[in-house]
Amino acid sequence: MFTERELRKGLNTKAFGNRVFTFEKIDSTNNCARALANVGKEEGIVVIAEEQTAGKGRLGRSWEANRGENLTFSILLRPKVSPEAINLLPLSVGVAIAEAIERVTRLKVECKWPNDLLLNGKKVAGILMESSMKENTVDFVVVGVGLNVNQTQFSPNLQARATSLKLESKQEIDRARLFKEILASLEANYYAGLKTEFKSVMSSWLRRTPMLNKPIVISQQGTIISGFVRGLSPDGGLVLQTNGTEKTLYAGDVTILGDSQAKQSLDTHTP
Ligand code: BT5
Image (cartoon, rainbow, N blue to C red):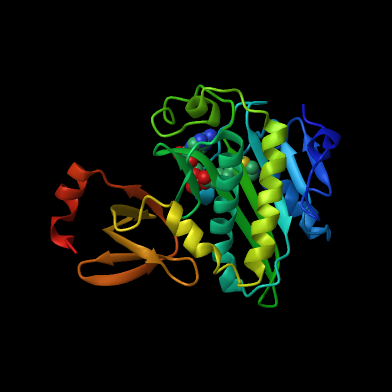
């Protein structure tokens, strides 16, 4: 099991990871980080667990990760930005993690809106942001990261869609080293992002996405919308061209269509 000492040794950050709470088993690192936020803990503390019994995704979905093989952690942030700006924060986190993974593995990481990282088209990481407001300002944000590192077997429902750094690089990854690279990268991107209310991250995110000008289908709690991705709005929404008009979407699950699927479902949306 990780120890705080091992995870902080050689860590090159100012505030991120100044305290690292390590757990063998916990319900969800996001829940724990939120509880710590509610008792006034400072920005930069991290909660990391070898196993989560109720790891969460968005909208009540679950995050599955084998014990001791991955990175599942949450970081507490108290960004002094407008509430609208925090929609861009998961994009900044995605870019930061992608950069750290590339430094350690040389694999090419892509960003998928709103909160996924992909390797060869498969999901390698998910980001879950939970925020709390006080009098119309941001009180705190907990950013949870689930990253598949050395896991090589996934449950049947995930097998076709999930991958890990080990599966793609054919190498066992030093999780503690990767964690420290990620924290340093997160901190650098976060401080740089604060200066522009995270708008500065948009160009790096767009460079990393396979979605631009591609046909997609987006599902929003039962409603399905299809169209071509045209970019990001200034507050982190996905700009979609659909039936000749542009729409900005703020939530949903995206499927990027392959050429043959695109022809079938988007004949009427040719740009
Ligand atoms: C996410 O949600 O991708 C955000 C996941 C965040 C997990 C971290 S772990 C540390 C922290 N503590 C928590 O409790 N959570 C955070 P979403 O976009 O809703 O995707 C969830 C979906 O991804 C599931 O419904 C599955 O289809 C799929 N999935 C689950 N586990 C996966 C895995 N290990 N790899 C790839 N896909 C997975």
